[in-house]
Length: 65
Image (cartoon, rainbow, N blue to C red; front, side, top):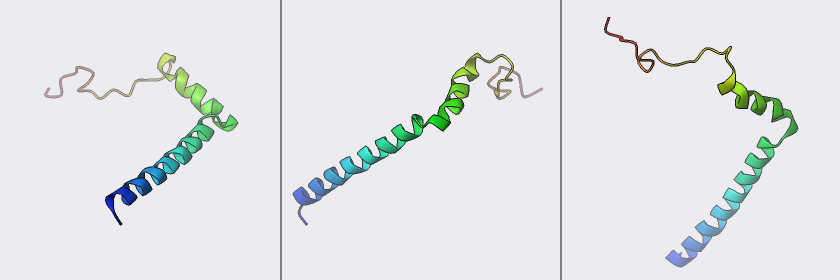
């Protein structure tokens, strides 16, 4: 197999692979049963009742004491 044939094969099947992958992700995102999950995730940064999961070091607390 020459380089040109191999490059054509990889480019063609790579395109097919990514188009199929895009269609799967697109269907997952817009599937009606996932609407509530994504709506909850979109509101999570604005929700004041959820405690942040920030590590103690990142929060500025001294871990040496």
